[in-house]
Image (cartoon, rainbow, N blue to C red):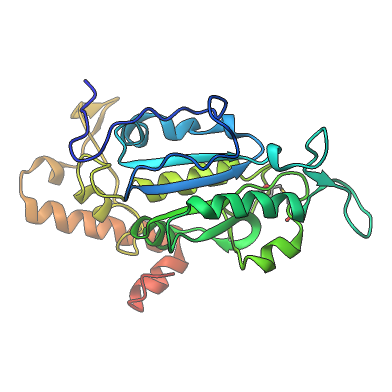
Length: 267
Ligand code: SAH
């Protein structure tokens, strides 16, 4: 498919690496554009998968902006050290408060007013579709990726940072979690998906998991598409899909089903 040039926003090439410009200068901003800033020891890991497909095209077209901020230049001494051994002893290393503090102060200069400051952390509140919607509705986000044993607690408290977890497992660093959350938020921004209705109908948006999907061929390995979907009767199709959604949610996610029945789609 040919690249569709953006209409209302300035086209700008956004490079994955920060090398060409000074690392301490604030990133050039596209005015009014949803801005994701990510403090990381691995800026070259961005945009990563966000540079592909719909999020990637939208990034190129200036529908959202990504500003990876390399933590390294904020480090201490000749080697730009960013970590040190944990106070009280124990395994691993901890990201230093002074180093991260400088990086955060730098990031806050270019953060849009009202953009939340998030630390990706397995101890955080579990990310969900409602948080993706909140992020997408705001002006952007500033994210901090941890590495090693994580971040000095004083930084989290001083900046009143919101800790958010991708799930109940431990990653090596926050970068994959940041990309997952940014993907979930950016795709909800207007103009990113071809068909806005698809975000309204999909899993979680109404508190239920999505019904099964089928496409051609009409029969595959002796398995037909459910006849109701081939009937052309939109009312019957909608009814079938709703019933399937309810059945699947009930069977797989009693927690969601319970909340749905209570009319509480936020949990
Ligand atoms: N010692 C920490 C884990 C550190 S993992 C603990 O036990 O809680 C290193 C970094 O990876 C973390 O600082 C965090 O930024 C990131 N990370 C790991 N698991 C994550 C998860 N489930 N969600 C979001 N970020 C995570």
